[in-house]
Image 1 (cartoon, helix red, strand yellow):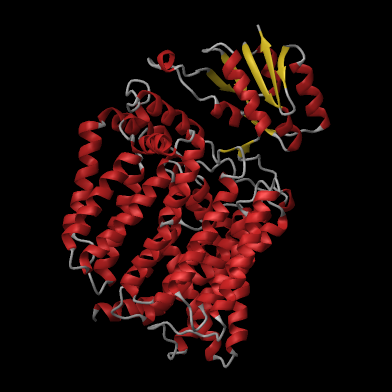
Image 2: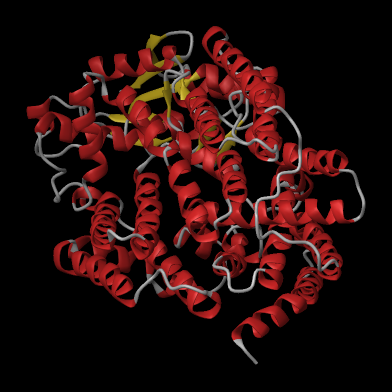
Length: 630
């Protein structure tokens, strides 16, 4: 049996394998007496079952072909582009004129995504215009989070990185290894921010967010070129870019461009250069550039390269199994591995030893530990919050099955097989329940790296599903409207998952940004509280004052504190030093203390203020109160 026949047979068996996997998962959940796990599993189980059923139906419709871009709608491209331009400008005005992002802003963004989706399926689709619209819209959505508010911090890693960049900016040197072991040997991110700040004449915060947007959205061009190079299908490549741009994890990291995000940018460009170097006459140039990007990735973030090497090796295996061409060479894989292993063990050995000692401890693996956030009672909200994941999985499985079944001798099968093997890293499943996988080894960070490939199989699934509907004698516009509605629901839930700043979607999470009054209060602390003092506060504030003392602190006039997170409200009277309370944040939603979230109930307010009144209030504004306990 030839390789093509084996893959074809596997594709035919895929619906049955999907059904068996889903049923086994549900049975296991009830076997361990956790029906809430079974309810959570509906987010992936139901779309997987539906996808397997549609795959069987598609397999019986042998005339469905995706070998070329089949435009389906007769719509004037100029009209759609003009409408996009008008609505896009309106969305920018909303961002400029209104202090927060209102509900109709998100509706407008959804309409803009739907317009681009429609253009992709129109007969006179213009690739350059569509790519430009995707880039502009993506930049607008990201900028609407990072540039609109005084200081966006996301998951708070931005705050210490700004401090590290300031050390590089003021000293002209990389971080001293004796004090900042985790980043001293991986300095490119902080050098990039510091140098850009000098060139632009802006402060570090504004510099970071201004350079992050173009650095991130330019990947749209490379994603299009990568998939168009390997599949020769411009329409599917455009849809891949659109799906990628609206995926929730992509939007999230677009606003959260920290070291691992920049490493991902370098990784994706490196992959494109590697593929381009195989098919272009200037092979040596592209391969040399790919090597430079490999070095960039290693030096910009400590551990991302390990995850990327694992995925490259898996892609290499998939290419050997299903590829009609071989873009990834043995020499390239060897070079990447030797480079990062050599750097880690010969130059950054202190970091490598510390990393291994902290992660490979016997007590970490004695028993599986379920993450604290996975609790019985929130499974129904989990389903609602993962509607976009369900729609993605439905189309992705259809796309994977179709490509493996029909696209013989085409490189798309490699990406399809790769996506199938890595779905477990991208969608909710039992592995994501475990502390060992998601916290210790950070499997959650695979999602961003896999997003382009998952977007590709989803786009293939959309085309296969659309053409199946058309094969059932459904009118073109009716079939398109069904697909458009599903895409719009997917887009809506992806967008609002990053809308914590809007009160219209019932978010109970804390703000991911500081307001002006809070920053004014923090400036007062930096200007009046003696350096080296104990400072107790909530989680986000403790991350803001993450500055550590090192041998250059006084020379560079950098403030430093012993910043602690408040354990619980009843321990406040025993704290020595200063206590910083974000009162407005507390009254609006909650404060994050070490023992858990502290909500502004009447009882909690009385308790907190009773304990705080035992200290001397030395500063206060509308958002922040500073107390001193001597």
